[in-house]
Length: 116
Image 1: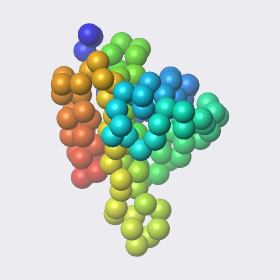
Image 2 (image 1 turned 30 degrees about the vertical axis):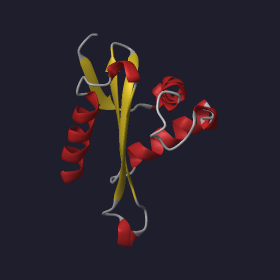
Image 3 (image 1 turned 90 degrees about the vertical axis):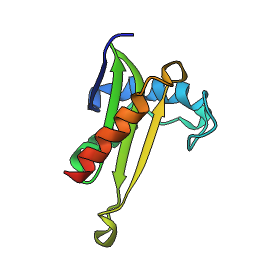
Image 4 (image 1 turned 135 degrees about the horizontal axis):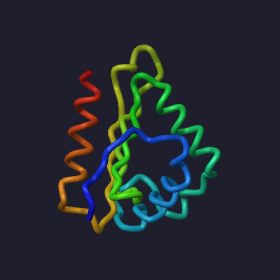
């Protein structure tokens, strides 16, 4: 395992993000969908990443071991004015990386981002 790098998701990472999601959804029952429900296209994922990057109350964070995506975390903010201060936080980590503090680090970074 190399040093884990954390960065905001980029549009050109859409395809590896989809592959990551398909894998991680098969590894636990505690995520919001099953692997066979990850059926969006690369173009759709590019649009999603771009929309997250354009919103001032949403953030999509990727953790990588080298070039391999090993975890993803996000805060997806509400768009209605009355609820713009509310957001949904989600974190997933590949099973082989559980217990290494990656989920905790992503959560911590997202909370710091939210406070800014």
